[in-house]
Length: 173
Image: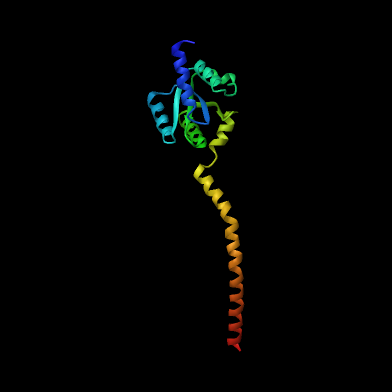
């Protein structure tokens, strides 16, 4: 392998090491300004957009021991999107950009040791953010305790209501 190609593979492997997932996209007719806008949106989620040669991507994926990339993934112009703690938020940005501009379409992705189709990435993008999921989980944990407090509170309230009714009945006589 030529030294230049080896350097490019090493650089791409460093980028792939930044996260547990990688999205592979086909970028078509995208301008420099649109690329800058996309990179800026992704940077807000600590994600990165890198244009790569398909042959370099194939070698780096094998070096990282990723599952075999599907044939169509290594055709056309390719970019990898990596980084960020929330792959669902990154997927939302990519899908929204594609919907608005029709210039960056997802080919697929890899999460952990699993290949993801475009449809699976779309489903991932519809998941709520990690903060919302944490809130829902916390609410689930708190629900039994809240219900117990309501039950325990109902007993004295019931006794108090009976006593108030008895007082009202005796005042009425």
